[in-house]
Amino acid sequence: MKISEKGLNLIKRFEGCSLVAYQCAAKEWTIGWGTTSADKGITGKSIKAGMRISQATADDWLRKAVNSKYAPMVEAYDKQFCWSQNEFDALCSFAYNLGHLHLLHEGGDPKKPLRSRAEIRAAWCKWDKAGGRHVKGLLERREAELALFNAAAPSPGTGGNPYPAPTKTITSNEQAQALRLKHWQNHGDEVKAVQWELVRLGYSIGAVDGLCGKKTITGVITFQLGAGLKADGACGAQTWEALTKAKEKPKPVEPSQSASLTAPPEGEPREAGGKPNYRSKAAKAAARIYPLAKGKKHGSGVQKRVTTLEEFKKQGELNCHLMASLVLQEAGCLPKGKVITHTKKAGGKKKITDAVRGTEQLRHCKVYWVNKRFAKLPEKWRRAGCVYIQNSNACVSAGDGDIWSCNKSVGEWYNDPSDWKKKKGYVVTSDILVVIVPDE
Image (cartoon, rainbow, N blue to C red):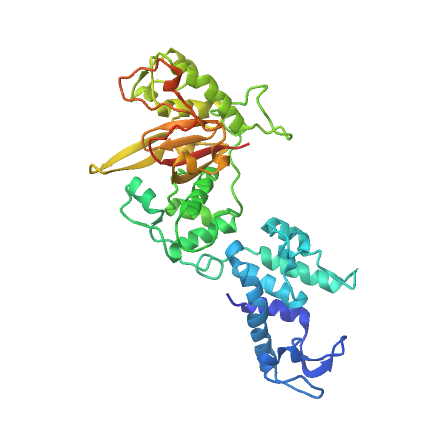
């Protein structure tokens, strides 16, 4: 990226310009918008007493200095932040004035982790000192830079989001096949446009690389859940419109905002601030629900007739979708009566392509599309209370390698605990397509 005229004008506003060489406070000969002999690589000459230049030359030297020395400093962080033009310009002014971008790191220390955008904004105006003292002129410059940094980005493709708006649904190969999409795209500049908007809102999806992989799909799903959209991981026209209009990451719906969500029971695990530990609640719910499998028949359509735990106790049939969904309901992560399911589409005799339905109804949890074996999942996704959807099963982690599972052929009966709880070393019959991780 290069600085715009707006950014250059901001620098000019506070730097001041002299078309005749003068000695600055450091006794160094200076001319134009702060050009010195250190910029000889740009000017081609040393700055000396008596030198005169035109306004056009001064402006040209300023632009070249910013784009060759300070813009690269800002662009080095573009993969992490995906700067808008306004943000880029503001940071170029900051770097031109101070010679660094320590502002972007915790404590102003370049060896420490990066700050979030909110933390950058909060720390910006603290860089107003010279010689250890607050300087009014520096504070005014910081305030002007911050105002530009916070200015609303132009429409995609016009200087804010530098990539073209999607003309097709953005999704992965697997998702497109599962959702039976006829027109879709999983790489290119239009994918970068979606990734840029996700990063702008603060989602951690990795680099803006134009490849619609697992992190991008997870970011889209998480945004859709927070925005009240169908959480299928496909960024179509409706999701794109919501993305571009969003000014901040949407907050998840709290139980008090929806009468259909289960209120957290008294005595359930909570964090110090009083927030329910939904993963622990899911683990406890599974421990209560799965033993009820004994003596029941495995049936494929039972979820249409059973919507609550009380009805399930009376029902003589069950299946994996119902079991996992009841666990999520009892944990407060799924509205009462709602069911998460997988669907199958035969792809000849060799392949089954699966999609998961109902994830848009989830609350207080994160949804990850992974397509991995259980043993290859990160440890934090194998802890008790995490829910898994496969191509032929839905199950819940019991922790320590055990799984509460419900994977029987239609017509068989559950008469033994081994029918529903698989011990360590249990080989999951297929890759896990989706991991649902309740919040802690």
